[in-house]
Image (cartoon, rainbow, N blue to C red; front, side, top):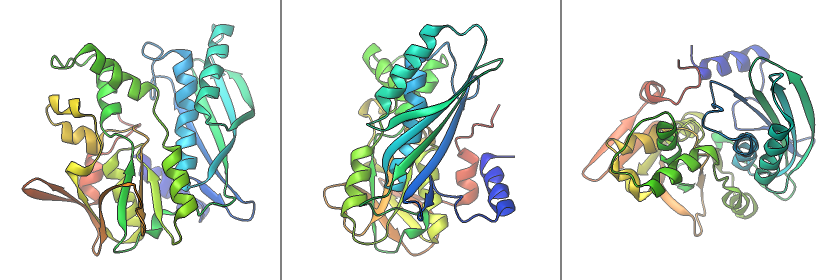
Length: 306
């Protein structure tokens, strides 16, 4: 069973209108909320990441969800489950990293418990004041697809951390890609610009589970087709040194970029257009490829894979 199936069961069981986007939009309170967890051995390894990097990424992935809604990140709580051998230096460095990634949001509490390995769970709250909030179901035919963040870098970084060898990469390039995975850049300015300037409804989501998956999530929720020009997608030029780099860009996870469909693209990077139909169409030089649900799920970045 895959992650999306679990989410569908939860949404159906609870009969909830809040589950499905990156954040739950609590309109009556003027806030959005999200929660993400990182589990040692599933999402990270102590062999790869320092306590500072763990703290940074734990917060960054939640700030990214707030940004995907269009809200302003305001408050965070952090729950840590730690082995008894954990020392005070780990705690200090973890929270220094967490504060660095908070982008001005305040860490206001949490919990610490014992465990046989490290579990990290972060809750983030964002303010909707003076912001227009997104929904994946808001894409409409004729809107432009805009994007922020490089794609494929984090997936290549993870491969490098896992020991895969790419002889054509320089040491500087290796560092760049591994750092992209360990300390993702959150697209807070892109989110703010859209949420404060768009006059009409828009769809926006982050690309934590892969760019193709993010595109399809909007297409499916809005019952439209997202038509994308591959060569307009931002990515590091040195990715071209890797065989099948296109798959890293489309299906590699944890880049934490943002995509949105808007009526007024302003000075943002446009990669395509919303059209009638369903699914995702990727236009390469000389040919196009159409992706339906099964195509996306077959390649989906999946935390439940062994």
